[in-house]
Length: 189
Image (cartoon, rainbow, N blue to C red; front, side, top):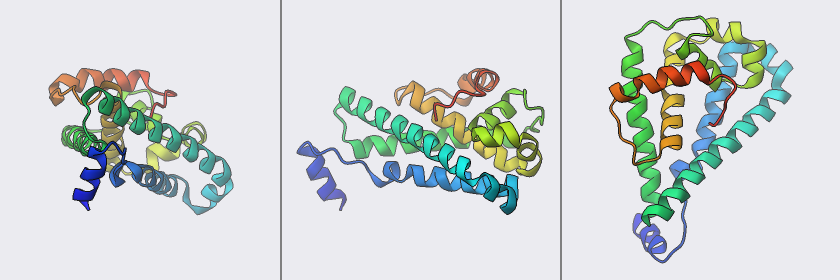
């Protein structure tokens, strides 16, 4: 129960809440959908071994980013990890919603070097990006790409800048565009 969890945390037990502990499962599912849309069954099965390896590597990075932010914030504030987990989720969701609202009104340039498309490709696994870039650009629905861009950027902003950074969408737009230009091949999340 939440009360039991609070009691244990107040006694010094570090508890990782389910929304942090299960985050890699959600990310894994998103890659499964992305691979299915871009590759289809035959190409996926041909590349399954390397894709699974790359997904596991990415999940390790994502889990590490989450744990570092939780523990760093806990150390600085003394706040319970479950409270911090809620703040991380709320902040990522807030930024994702703001970005997606902005992106939904914009056409997405299909040029792989455009900042937003570069951000989308940065999220994609190396094998997908290097061998199936055309499929990613053509087969993934535009709204799905925009959702990936919004979530990827939001996660990066929260993990890199922490929970004390609270800009508006107008404040982060230049950061987003710069991130998109410089992100391909850099996978902090």
